[in-house]
Length: 308
Image (tube, rainbow, N blue to C red):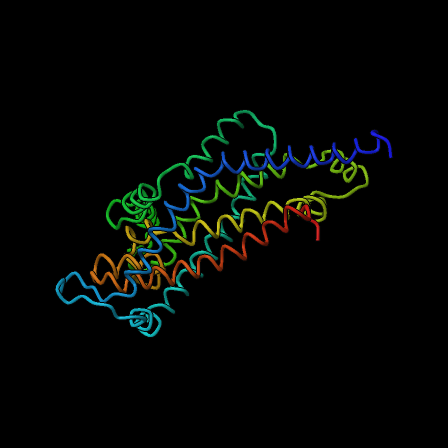
């Protein structure tokens, strides 16, 4: 064995040593951010779990003690959790579906060249930039109000009955506001997909005699499948946690009491800290399950490139 035979082994060892050093340096740079994230998220969650094991109602501050899983038993058997889950699923599903449909429509319109397209895109994005509480207040007084709302003004002009939207149609009211606010979000995602479409394929389809509808259904929609799935998954995770429109418009009445509002009701109206914490833990567990399924599906979309 000569000296040159040992060079590759030594070189490989040096490479591994350098890679380990780089890996340790990368972990060291990320450690403060990871530690801050853990402290910011996990400590409050652990405190919430601790509160959920305690009997603690602010109306009776002296009557406080450890109760074990009694708060969880109350949360699961009180009859309020099931309707809240149903309301959450219903509001989320309707809002996401309508947002995707309207977002697709506006994306198709804004993908075409016309004068003032940049201004139109900017105006279409505006609803998503409005804070949820401000959006709910705008709709409550400017659109849904019985006396000064635009919808009831139109109804009076057409000699139609005046509606108290938040009272008569609470679910429709909440879904309308959420659809208005999240349509631009879906539009942006789908517009990015349309602009990434190969124009040569569309031109070839036109040359082959394919009409507009057939080109859209056989070429554009399959191309947009990945973008639709991304929009649905992200929109569902966000809308699942929505609280402001429900608190401002309906206060949980008429089948709109979602998990987020149920938690608020137990904590700030019922003043039962222990039971509210139990509802919070159950809500977090359900949200983690939905988010895990959504993220796995989202990763599959990215890995498969949208083709399955």
